[in-house]
Image (cartoon, rainbow, N blue to C red):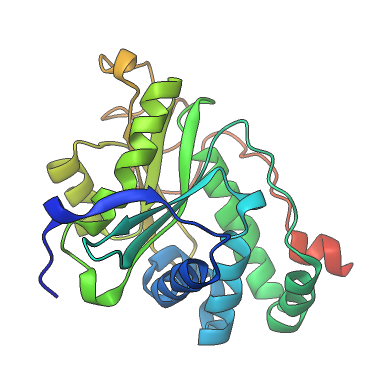
Length: 251
C-alpha cells in the first residue's frame, strides 16, 4: 500500500479503547510469526491462536512502559512498538493468560529451553543499565517497508534522549538491521546467535549527551565485555531468566 510517512502521526496507543487495542493486538499477532527470534522461540507450536495470546500478554499496559503507534492521516493504526524503561517493574501476565499458556506451551520442554536461552541472551545484550528497550515491534502487512516502523520508533528515541537513556532494538534480519543503521542512524552494538536459530543484531540510539560514544568493549562499539560479534556465546555468564510458564505452572 502506498503511504506517505510525512502524513503519518506517532502517538501512544490507547489500550483502554477496545477498538484501538484490538487493532494493536491484530497487528502484533500477525507480525509475530515474521519476527525471526520469536518464530524460533515458538517453533512448531506457532499458530494464530498462540501469536494472539502472546500479543495480548505483551499489550497489557502494566507489563510495558509504553506502546507507541504509527497512524495514517485518516487515523488508521498501522505500526506498533512496545517498549520498557530500565525502572519498569514488569508484572506477571493475567491469570487467564497464564492458564492459556499452560495449555499452549506449558508442557513443552524444548520451548522452555528456548525461552530461557532467548531471555538470557536478550538480557545480556543490553548495552548498559540506562536503556529503554523495544520488546516488540510490528507493522501491518500492507504497510511494511514503507517507513512506518521508524515513525512508531521516534517517540521512544525522543523519550530516551529526554531521560538520558539509550534506545535499543533487536533485529533478526540483516537487511532490517542495515536499514536501522543506514536510514535511521542506529549503531550496531553487538549480536547473538540462538542455537539452531537466527542471528539477532542489537541496535542502539544513544542519548544526545552521549553521541561521542561510551566505552563498550566489543569491536565496532560492541557490548561491554559481553559478547563476540557474530555469536551468542557470551563471555560472561548472563543473568538468570525467570520463566513464568514454568514457575506459575509448577513445572
